[in-house]
Length: 251
Image (cartoon, rainbow, N blue to C red; front, side, top):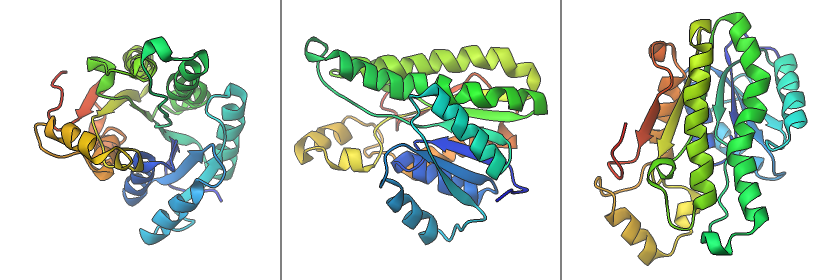
């Protein structure tokens, strides 16, 4: 179904932050396409969209492995054929494979680097040219507080998320005169299924370390993404916007 709305593509769009971002962007008038790579994970997303009264005229799904460059090219071409050119890209796909570095396997390293960092290249490469040609585009990359402060047991994750910040600042310089902005959002701890699975005593220690005294909601992260994706943020590029409740203060 072709749409007259601007199309926003959200990788990892069926996860906690991804789903909230899809809802927020759709509510702001975009036609949102959620990428997912694991069959069956889209069921909860469909329910969340239906509960938010967002039907086929506002949202759609696109299957594809973000670690596969050719698959992402095929996915982007299909999205654009079905719905229209991608005007907003949110690179939200991510996984963790936490362990100390001395126990980390080669697979655990590459799985996280490929899914969290290489995916940003794999998808962005297929949409940025069209954005430049049309003279308008928004790219928002999801990094992490741990990209800057590091985290015990997350050498792979922190390295990937730090790479996203370098990618963001460098690409922003290349396309700044073409009407395309490139920014990052770095969440701290967020209320998701992943954090809900943490042992209560450990979770209590985590929350106790956050100056605001609580974790972020997924909607609060989505609000930051939606702002950077909007026309209101036209003069903002190459920025990393922290959403961490004061857990780590930096620019």
